[in-house]
Image (tube, rainbow, N blue to C red; front, side, top):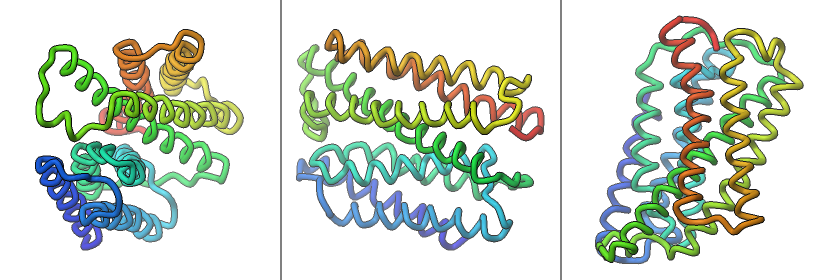
Length: 264
């Protein structure tokens, strides 16, 4: 429990210092104090899961544990992005979110962890990496939308200085979506190859929604390549695809594990 508290405190302290730097208009990129705190929180977050898994002898991927692992991935990606100038503004949202999902996981009574062979573990880890990467893309899309709307309305607020230039933000959005799309593709392929009874009754909706999300993300990348899609269209497609993905995985796990009390 101590390691969990350290992670939560480090995350929140990093977010607090980051808010202070952004308010003062100072450059927030690179290895600044909040950045070291963010990596401390990320390392302790990961260690907390390792300790929990060693105690049970297997990886626990129940609803809250999976949510926490996605938060961990988002925090790690944000710490990496933070070295790129004003991209660190992501941390204001991501670090408190990671702290919240970690706290929720360790306050929740864990269920019986399922034993997974290496193939199913590969599928599960690819899925979590895909969700974390695409969740960061969704946050970047929201940042892009807020920035475009403010510029279009000529509402030049102080927080605009905390965001990267529009072109840089849009470029990072599509690079992140591309990586997430590759991971999501690998997730679906390993699911078809390794998961038995993929189209069993309780997996049909998860599979269909995941494939729909994959198609939307793929359509967005194709539209970007062929027609130069950007701006509001890119934001809308990203958020629709991410909503489908959240429903596919966490919506399914919530219903199965917390309402129906069945293993996902």
